[in-house]
Length: 143
Image (cartoon, rainbow, N blue to C red):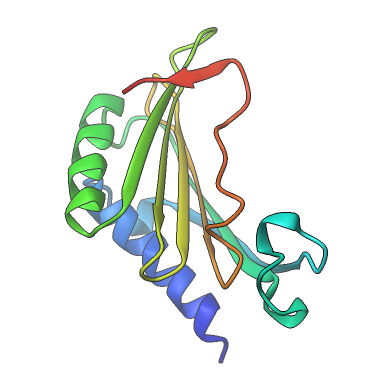
């Protein structure tokens, strides 16, 4: 069994629970491992350590309000030692919650629409937190 795959799956469940969502209401998509042997952000790692595992989970609208989900997750992740950033779209009601933990090498990115549907990406592995950048426009820092 791949411990990174287990970590990613456990984080997905924990994020939904922290957001007040029943994990059974979310669909979990396939796990993929990505290798980036030439990634400049990971250059100080040996080539065989320049990778991460990623899994996506989606939530249909109407399960939890956007503001409630953002508030609950921000507090919960910060309490666990994550650095949390939030972004809002200049063209829609969509928000992004971005969180990274160097302690366990996890990067979480959650897109939440105004209607409450959500898409959650969780990455883990030696290079997962090093490629953490701001989302591209139309997303701007919220706080």
